[in-house]
Image 1 (spheres, one colour):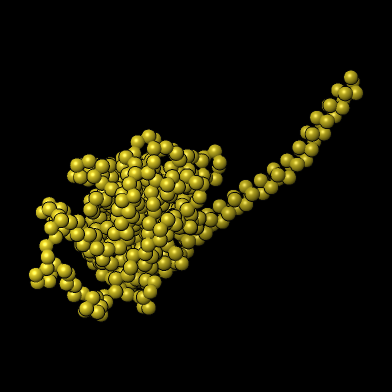
Image 2 (cartoon, helix red, strand yellow):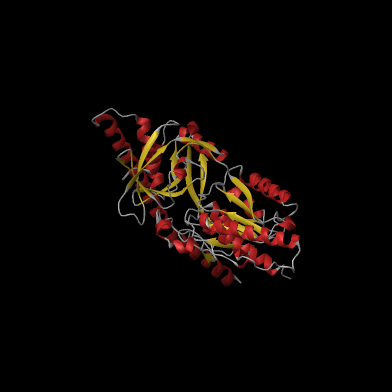
Length: 446
């Protein structure tokens, strides 16, 4: 018994010694890291003092500190940054749905400002700015090498003032200038209308208004149609929607899902991960949904498209989305400033990350480019209306149909012609509506 106790005690002591021998170098390494951090902070203080005392012009110490903080954050990724009190206020205004500017969502790539998407109905959209455009100069001054926030600041100005931006666009051989008049941007989060028998919900951004306006807009279209049974489905148009509030993306997804995961987020610490599930209730009452996306659909738009696609609740049509699959947390700081920090990646219900890959549509449909003057080159014979049997002198009447039936045929023909006109105006939307027509023609599935 004594031998056993001694052996056990010896094993315990050996374990303690072994642990101490292993932990010793680890503690030493940690101590070296801490010392290195203090040395780097001393170096920062030394440089700060030399700039303040010896720079050719007097500088504001607060500006130096703010620039250092912003540089530290922007070195992490394109979406982390420091928000001064003024910028933090503007961000809060934007999430409420009203702010001043050109009306573009931008990011930074290769040192230049890249347009994620223009916002519907804004000066930038009306001036023809497109998703994927690079802005290289503002009023003749190069943006190369500037921080994104500084470049954005150059594009801001008084409402009604004019700005000239230089744009580089894929497919264009030379950069070109675009003149835009700044305006107050009032975001209409959702525009609802009915095309034929399809309700079209155009979602331009995800701010505090998005879900309430979407619900209100859909209810208005249902009421105008005298009941949802008279609609063949819904087109959820997320093209050129740069994203916004995660909470609103979840609410919009939940609006059309009865159950299951909507999105999950995973941060550096696995314990900080989160998963959001849908609650019962479908605003569309099971009607088919087509989601439209393109290269300007980012962030919150991709969460909605990915969730509805993974649950086979919607057919996703268009072109590959932008591919922003990271989550930014805005953390308030002293003096009313804030820090926007990337804290997690988000994943669709099937577990796929959208980061840098985007959402791939189920059906790829590109918007045909508009070629000015091309209509003049068309064969005139194709544009001439063709004569039919009814146009021939003395042709027989159709005696098998009543006047009401003939009227119905003529109304259906007029609707078909309107649909053909829509293809010329917005080919992708017309394609989405055609899908809903086809699903409606097949009838309900068991």
